[in-house]
Length: 442
Image (cartoon, rainbow, N blue to C red; front, top):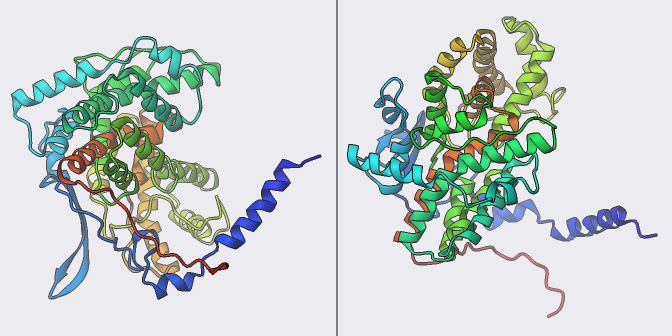
């Protein structure tokens, strides 16, 4: 009898032998793995007007680390958030800024919001026939399937002109919260045997408000919850052209492909645990720490346990303290700096002060331990994912939706990069790979 599993394992062994590339060849041909050099600096692959990340500055001719900066269309992200009123929700305003390249005035913002509200609808029976038909715990897969299926309902699905692509991007910005929440409710009903409810979006509500309203059985939420979620969406909506999913967006756009296929490709990139799933790993780690260090105020016990995590003795034995460090930022992640005050505000409202104390203690202790244990070329500080999972937990958002929350925000940035690629570029992106293949037949 043919043993399929053993057959595949044997074939994998053959494949691994023939696909192996000597690490020395990367140095010999000056090829940077992951398009990053040994200092973490990325290979320049394009130009953009949309956003900028700063992690170091030149002082007396020498590059030195600095507190991280994130800029959207010429504005520092913290200044954009600080310019909003105490309870003002700004996701839509900043999405307009990213897409159009300028801040909207009152009338422009009103028209933009009105158009987004009109787009917060799905084709007739789409929820039943597509989303509920094959529910899955993998909400990102469900959303990606829905995105591709939406093309079947669009008479201009393959029209990649700037005008049509902008329409489709704005449509997807509006629909993403629905695709995520409805996919979760379908999964929770069919797989977890829980009650299912499908709430229609309210045209008078913002993206953050609609998400909370659609997620909850009683539709209730308060101003603090909406403000914190809105801030999280703004901080996650864009992060330079060099991240994996945004680069995917530009590569697929450059081929002439349609909006639905392009965004589906970006979703497939984001769902990878090395990209969009970091906050889930933070939450799993925090739960493990709580089980082993029940006294959150005991810094000595916490330090000992974090050291065990670094030494690969416990948790997932990968030797990583999740939520610490970033591929680009060194001294600090500007998103984490901004977000922290909103996290504290929500923790007080939700009476989660003890949990907040644990997070703050880890934030203080972990960088010191990592600096002791690792040879690192730059500083280590908490990134935005360190707190985002905690926020989602306080908002009652299930873990199955964490990566989808990232997508609900990042669709604005992907859309901006798709439009810039369409408007500015006319060549397909074709990266070069050097062949190190051994010639057998000459």
